[in-house]
Length: 125
Image (cartoon, rainbow, N blue to C red):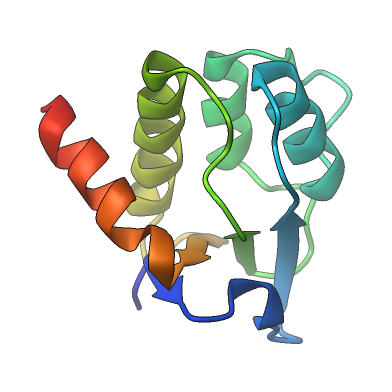
């Protein structure tokens, strides 16, 4: 299974056997944490920081469906450093889940953002 996908119409993605969370336009880091906490139903102990985000993306014990999908219509408005941290966290979290785990995590972006995201990741290494 592809863990990162780029689709022409990401907001049209739906699969009734997966928990699909649609991330709306993100204006800053605090908005990102708030939206992710809301749409992924993070537990109350979520600490609104990068480490807590990674921890929650590697758990999902509170979600009954096996598949958890984060759909993003556009790249969040964050500083370059924050954006790199965010991409590292979501890509690492998606990659860390194995086929034998209780859940899997997949991230979907817009096809038009693929070159920007891939270049950003490639240039930062």
